[in-house]
Amino acid sequence: MRMISLSLALLVASSLAPVSAQNKEDGRLAKAATAFGEIMSAEDKGIPGSLLDKAACVVIIPGMKKGGFIVGGRYGKGLVSCRNAAKTAWGAPAMLEMGGGSFGLQIGVSETDVVMLVMQREGMDSLLKNKFTLGADASVAGGPVGRATTAQTDAAMKAKILSYSRSRGVFAGLELEGASLSQDGDANKDLYGEAIDAADVLAGKAKTPAAAKPVIDVLTRYSPNGK
Image (cartoon, rainbow, N blue to C red; front, side):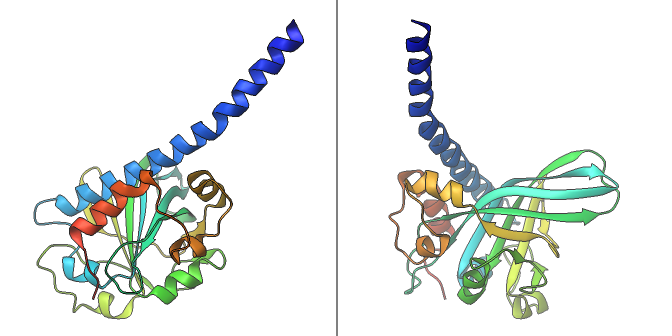
């Protein structure tokens, strides 16, 4: 009887594991959509629409953790969505991980929402080949903030990636030199139901899952077409 009970428990656990993993990724997508929507809807703040319209891809890392004493670190999980070839729609998201060390006086732990505009699709394709270090493998700069901000700034004209952060209600450009991005293979497998490379997802070879609809909707709301 004990063996039967144990076998039944293992069977139930194994059947529930994929559901839990799926729910975990659904939660990540929902948080990313909420974070981006709140950033863009902030009065007189947010990412300039002129810049967002020029972006080939958008990376969203909701609740990136940063903490430690004297020597700190960054770690977060999020996603990236890219426009299709015609620049008329946002494609299915690929899941990403972000990490990197930082130095300075950092007491306690904070969470920060991070958004990155990838201004050239080639930069995203390079990112997906290997672990990608911001600043070393592609130029990155803190993006300008505010609806009326013109795209004609040094950062916007030169950097391949523009980065932003929001922590405790404060939204600003973010310097992310040295942070790394890499694809989250396990999360992509959980979300799409099979092992799939992030490059294939962004190339349009995967159907957008229902859980990603809030992310696609919020990106479309603020930038339906690219330039």
